[in-house]
Image 1 (tube, rainbow, N blue to C red):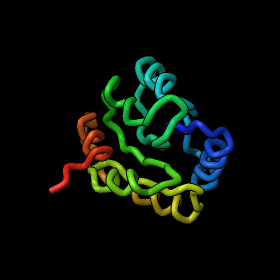
Image 2: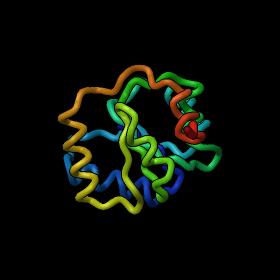
Image 3: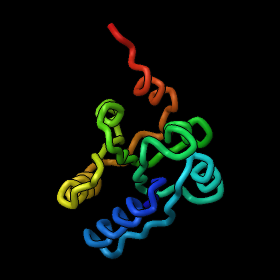
Amino acid sequence: MVIIEDEEFAARRLENMIREYDPTIVVSAKLESVSESITWFKANEEPDLIFLDIHLEDDLSFAIFKEVPICCSIVFTTATDELAARAFHLKGIDYLLKPIIQNDLFKMLDKYKDQPKALCPVNPDIFNEIINPVKP
């Protein structure tokens, strides 16, 4: 599992809640930016699950997928639901609104355990549709 979050307190809080849910879950990395995430994904084995803040310090997190193929499930964490609500409709992608409520996180983790893995790889063009939806 990887947490990509540019607010240190939010990343630490999320990690602590995940450990409360299941102390055996390993958070492989806590990353703060698009550039750091791209470097990490190119050098490491892909995790089973990514918690991903939409607005990072150097860009929208969707930019990661233009550089590296991602085949795992993704949970967006965001303070605003406009983009996240659109992301929710994509297969293998879910979202949690900040501040994350422990009960919501636990329900999402239960759902993750029960659902099949995401489709591979995540198509970066999908994120263009999230940011700039086609209007009928």
